[in-house]
Length: 443
Image 1 (spheres, one colour):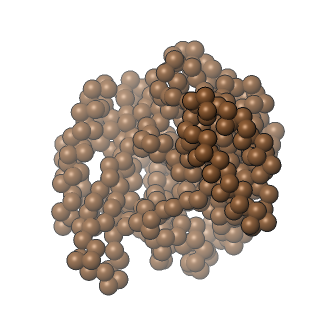
Image 2: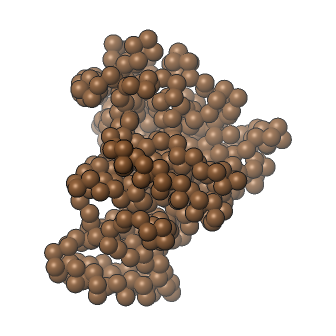
């Protein structure tokens, strides 16, 4: 039973120290509808729970592509500001249906495991097909990644893992000296995600002020934890994301390596395949095996995503952080294996939208026209999440008129697939132009 509870880190971080986080109601609504990605993770014999029923034309489109769509269970009602897990727990009818699945031997595979998913597992009797929340939080922490990197002797930026306030105070002197010498540092929230929870500092006074804020806040709360990583900022040429699956028996499989496309530290998509030298690919494979073995020793199993980077001199930093959950790349694997030829190039990305009214999927297909992916040619644009397009639309009858709220933001997720980098770039440009036509709305 699949569950796309994206940004589970927000739940993990609620009772953790670190750096302040801000997000708008509109962005939360869109992120929560990323739950529809889970449609692409299972097979026809699986079940996926989503916040609301998918557009029927979108489901027909997935069948057209001959993708094995799981059985879909939609929550009876949904709160745009809640995750799919929270909506499922509030739906007694759905909980009863999940109990029946549990009796038939189903297991729960969420995007990530927090206390909320543990509560759903307990309420339904569905055994978790992933480690418990306590272990996931520990592994997902940048402090854990930093210490594993130190233990394995991996190349890392100069830096320190500061679990306690005392540890943060101790590194203040060395950091101040390096800042005075012209170095830049990043102070990272141990459970930050998608570029959030990172503060860049390039002068001593700014760093000291940030430290004082953290120290004062936690001491007022009677807490001695800091939970930040302080690292020198390293110039990078390429961001990478790779995934390992750790078996309960300790077997480690490197699933894929992809180039991550980021803007300002925020994830925007992936390029498939990653452009790696033979030496870089071999080093990543070796590190993946070592990190997977280390995870197994700590009791972790299942999927883990690992971020890495290459600097302008071609040096690989193979362990920037570990993500103890599914990754965006996880939901692309089925498409990659079934629809993308080995000699093709794919760009997984999203297109920001500003809409005046909800858009139906048939309207999107009409706008895309001949740019849509075709199995025969193996080229075109393939939609892999449609729910995020309309997720932030005002609910009917909520009293918000067009004058007060003329537009809302959405995202269209998809994969641009071509035979060359130039063809993919041109398709991407043309899709962006077509999508801009949706501003006028649906009908």
